[in-house]
Amino acid sequence: MNICLYGSGSPKTDSIYTDEAYDLGCKLAENNHTLVFGGGDTGMMGACAHGVHDSNGKSIGIAPEWIGNFEPLCQKCSEFIYVDSMDERKQKFLENSDVFIISPGGIGTMDEFFEIITLRKLKQHDKEIIIFNINHFYDTMLKMIDEMGEKGFLYKQEELFKVATSIDEIFNHLNDMEIRE
Image (cartoon, rainbow, N blue to C red; front, side, top):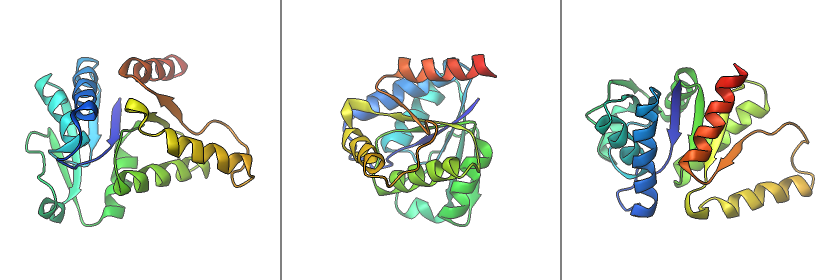
């Protein structure tokens, strides 16, 4: 499977998060999955990509060339797709991925998450979305989403995403997907 990881590219990301991202990358490679990501060499993206590459896995980086002015790009990708805009980048993520994992991140990660979940809600794709809630990072956001539902701001419908607090839980979800296919 091609598994897209959304997450921080910040070099200031605490190791409690990046260590998990690295281990996730190793496990993705060990299970012959391809990492699809924003092409960054630091933060959650970089840590996961380094785990993939250190375990002889494959990765597809997707980014506009100008993003290199803000963060270093990963040079070890199996393939790198250059795009002109962030919108085109998100479209390429959708086209090239079977599953989305939302790891801890900032505004860019939130943008990607809310777009991909909105597209799923609007039935523009039926790909799985897994929030990797490392160290309870997303607890506040998940509570906010629950409150939106309780107050009638969300349509009642099927589960749009899963939550995992460990790599094993992520792989339980992935294995469940493979069984259903």
